[in-house]
Length: 313
Image (tube, rainbow, N blue to C red):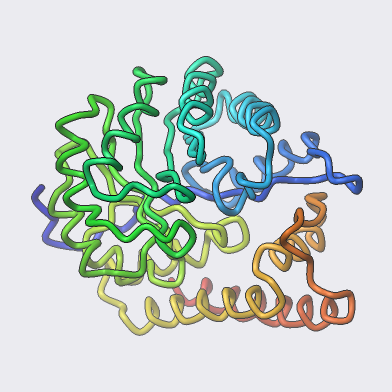
């Protein structure tokens, strides 16, 4: 794969949306439309449904199907891609979810490798991925590399090369790994129509500089304009502003992570009028005593984000 001589002004930003829950813990499907409308306004390029941010491993297979159907339906007629994560510790369930994603009209699928019984080597990871991808032969397939959650530390560049030979629909990687050396090896291994979607929001600037062709992240629902400012500043060589934007992204992640990242993310979204409810056990929401502090920090952060975005001109 040949890399461009200059940084792109804009790489696709794909939001990993939260899964909205009602007060009784059931799916709140009525909130998906409001979430989608917000993402369209934010100017993102797609959604990554049933991923880590969506608490997919806390959902039943039936719930994952219903949620996928809802997102595909709501996004129909928009320009947003809808990639459905179908990974599961049970490969047969993962393949069934892949079949379903193609049936309902998803744009693509992705899958984590099984992480309870883990693939012992790259070849086993490729074989498992090929089994899943075969369930949706008309959809692009992205392998999802997330070692912090799966505990799988395999050479994803070698995986990409072998999977491209084995899987006709191999479209690239969703690479949620802070190892930027490995990321560069993966970029070098990409085929001409493949992509590397980077999944660490706090490292987007170096990832794009090193060849990431897109990004999937949870904070794009809150701050997509900040990441657009970051990209545009870097593309024109305004590194001071680009670094400032990236530091502000890191600050947001620190604010959310202080009292439980996903629970805090949902508190902020609820505060903004999006009825997404709370998280499911074993995750827990921030204690009520900390919500005021969280929202105060969020409001201060938002003011500063506006100032950074205004500086892009």
